[in-house]
Every structure is written in C-alpha cells, then in structure tokens.
Image (cartoon, rainbow, N blue to C red; front, side, top):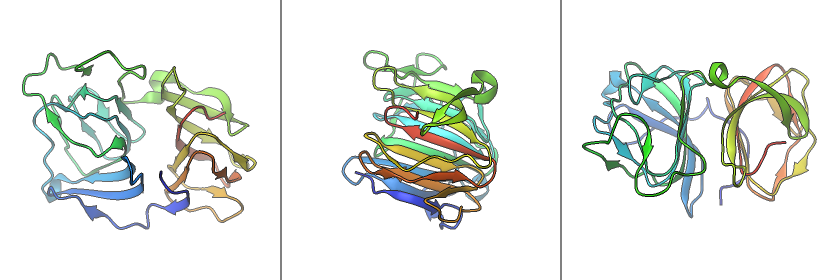
Length: 246
C-alpha cells in the first residue's frame, strides 16, 4: 500500500534521471507491493530525449495529465497543460510520437511500466489488444474542459466545479479536474477508498497547516483519515479517487 502523504512540496523536489538521455522523474508515491506509482515526469529533447518511434502498449493502465510544454502520441492530439490521456491496460498508442520541447506531465500507472512494441498497428487510433474492451475506455483530450465542460457537483461533501475526465462505471474509480474558490473548505473525514490530489497552482491547506505556494501532492490510502482542506485562494486540482469524490 502507498503511504499517507500530506502536502508534499513537488517543486522543491530534485529531478532523478531515469536512464535514457533527457528523461527525468519526481516520484510522488509508490506501492512497494504492486509497483503502482504517481510521478511527475520531464522529457527534454535539448538534453537528448527521443520519443519512442514505434507504437506500443503496456499491460497496466497509464494516465497522463499535461503540466508544461507540449507533446503528442499521434501528432493529432497534443498534450499541453491540463490535457488528459487515459490508456487502459493493453491500449496501443504512440503511433507517431513527438516531443518538440521540454515537457512535464503527471504520470499514473498501476504497476511497473514495461513496453510491448507493435511494429504494424491495426490503425492509428487508440485500440485495445487481446480481449474485451475495458469498462473504463481509452481517452485523449487536448482540452478536456472545452470538450467535457465544468459541472457543479460536490467534492468531499462541499460544492465544487468539476470536470470529470474518466470513470469506471462498475466501481466508480476515476479522475477529475476541480476548481475550488477562495474560502472553500471541507471537514476531516474517513474514506473507504483512496484519494489522491495534485494541486496545480498552489493554495490548498490541510488541517490548518500553511498552504504550499507551488505544486503540492496528497495521497490518502483507503481507510485512513482525510484532512480538513481549505482553499486559501482560487485553486485548481487534479483529483483521483477509488470510488467517488462526493
């Protein structure tokens, strides 16, 4: 199980080289048993990074949120800040990948990420190999807010504007963007599922502690206490949940 993490200052962390030239990571959390992890990744072609030239798939899911720069898996949908991509297990992608400039993205995977290359893909749209289509389908939104829109819902019991990015209809697990106005607050509570929050622009405090000015990260494992949150200014967050976020 991943540890409980409250208010990790992401911007203060050092970059760790991953091996290939120009590829770096900040590991935010990891499950030592399954290999599931969340990390901020950096690709820098100026330091030698070269995108994979062959389509491929992973046996686990891969979820991406654009943070800085821009890149593409197919040169049709571009991953820019706030773009969202979800590849369920065995989703073929990377048909025509390109990284024109230094780019950062948030990466979530369900286990160690191995590459299975597909030299001759069936076509150049996302598709799943070997088996039935997953309940949580592939998704690629260059501008998810424009394509999906904001909805007035509830987050941790309080009203919030959310953009639901993807969701498993069977178990409710999913991801969303959320906007929290200055003064928004939630009470401490317990959850049976996990809750993961990446603060995109700073200003979210927990249990009365000062808010981190830049990017911040929270992970609450299933069954552990969720802190009382407060938006010290208008805040936008990326939230992942194991069942629902109401």
